[in-house]
Image: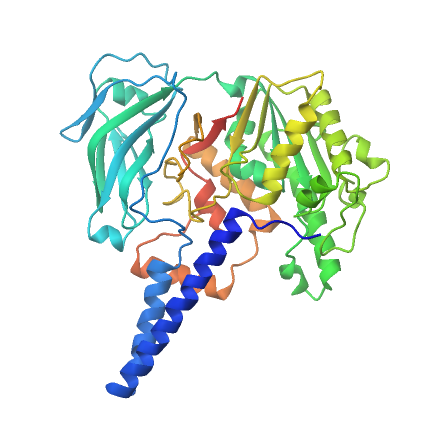
Length: 472
């Protein structure tokens, strides 16, 4: 069954087309330089051009860094008046903060000339603490800093804000979002694939009074790493699915989540959209030569409705989710944000939970959204492991968003990194091309690798914050 092209796929297709055009123009320039000047000049220019591309132009950035982010926050949001004075953020009137509020500061960030070659970042400091939040090279527009956990420094007038390879300028605007401490409630994290729960919400669920982890798919496709061991394509996919099913059940134990609070539903990767389109029709695995979800459910500690026939259908998925929600009775459900995270399995995971909740006797008090992928910027969150997470690029002002930021201590960040390290899908070594690109970016563009692992998600997910969006 054919599936519609997502906005992310469209942007990537356009990006590749533009690169092909640029490559063609470059080849013509090289040929002309060799004919008109000296024979070895094209070789030198080709090497220099390739290094420049890998260092500065290889990011999937599908917008101009001079574009303003366009956020629309709820009209009832608290907006204290602030100003920048001598590098400090100063409140115009006293502000009462408990310390766990989400604080967002909108301000224009303008790159300096070095900020076109080195990642520009905004430095936050106050007392003995410091943080940096990184933006696009060549940035020149409105951006949103995450000041959560900086409340006491803000109130005392000790919060300093300065740019490195960039300048902060203009009139800042501050929003204060107050929310209950969701760690004191029963939390259920919906993970489309094994590791999504850890990437998005390990800090939250590891501290929750009671936590449940529900993983929808086995994530069995793209098993080339296992084919290199000599396995056939279907056999490699089945092995990868079994390993990721195991990961989804046992890695939460590292955070203190009991086995009885974990479930792997065993549906097939990138088939949720097809299931949703034809709710009664089973959708077999693309690569594992399987049409029975029970192969990947063997570690579940209790039976589920879908175990009766193992059919990978949308109706079975809804029945499984309803049974789990009634069993766990979560006060908070954490799931992908359908407008920010473009992965088709993530969008369908959100839709499945919302549909499963319709008419159900138990309803959560709160639904939190997360984004492990973006439409417009594959590098977000930008910057290094341990840095803060600024708000991602959003260009739809009609989308009303309410952020919720959870601060993670260094110890909690390390525990999260170790949980990610246990995930088999994040363990294989990157392809040679990617390793070369990272080496060039480290030497030429100053980008540092994560100390926790080679996979890009160690850099992106192990941060001072976990960022959610209050959907309900």
